[in-house]
Amino acid sequence: MSENSFTAEVDAKAADSGANASAQFRERQARAASGGVVDHERVSLLAGKAIKGLNDLIIEEQVSYEEYNALKAWLIKVGEDGEWPLFLDVWLEHSVEEVANEDREGSKGTIEGPYYVTDSPEFPWNGTIPMRPDEPGTPFVFKGQVTSVSGEPLPGAKLELWHADNFGFYSQFAPGLPEWNLRGTFVANEAGEYEIHTIRPAPYQIPTEGACGQLIEAAGWHAWRPAHMHFKVHAPDHQLITSQLYFPGDPHNDDDIASAVKPELMLDPQPNPDAEGEMVTYNFVLDPQR
Image (cartoon, rainbow, N blue to C red; front, side):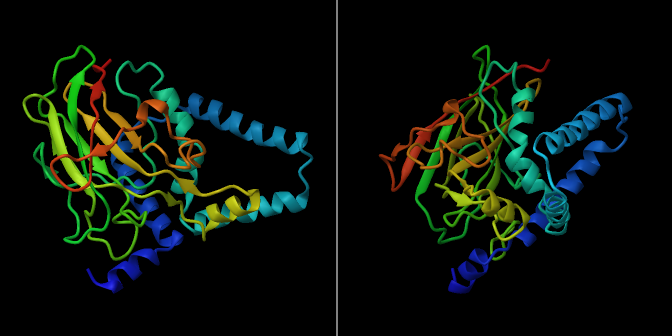
């Protein structure tokens, strides 16, 4: 891989990443919302409570016109930078996910995040994820089984996997990366098993030169997400699970800016006895459709 390719990748800008995230989300939402019916009472309830909450905050904290105008300018900048998907997924999605999965008996879920892309290339149960010939990073083998909560294997279950590279960047959201780099869908075998060959992802900071970074700096927060692997796992007649899996020892497991880490999502990597790098076994358990 040329040095120029790495340079283009690490020069990724928040505005470009945000614009890509916004475009991807709009396309997916347009497909999902086509023909949908608006529940006006529900919209009135939720929007009314959100607006009331902000007005209550203004009164309680005696917000000045200077502070109000600073907020107004910042909200406009979030839109101009294309960072609404980033803002919402980092600071709000974890609560939506908690509500959505509160009754789940099987594997724990967590947020999807802003960097999911549909229709990644499909591979057999023991495939290698798309990557560059000299992809930097520690080789990593992820294997396990997909079962129902009853213990039955789920043959043909599909595992969508996507994660950042060794520099903390995602394909299709940073320049210089192949379209499907470190993105793939793997089909479990007849026993519901999978064995995926990839590299260990790196921790990364969310984009900081745009509006979200401006908020982080003003509040004195940090912008780090711990290293993690994203999954969507689905099988016929079972509920989709969206999850992220984490690595022990990461300094930001306890203060993830996206508040998405859960103890049940921590991996236990071991040295791979058969090859260079690491391996881990992790099983997904899916709930039946309600």
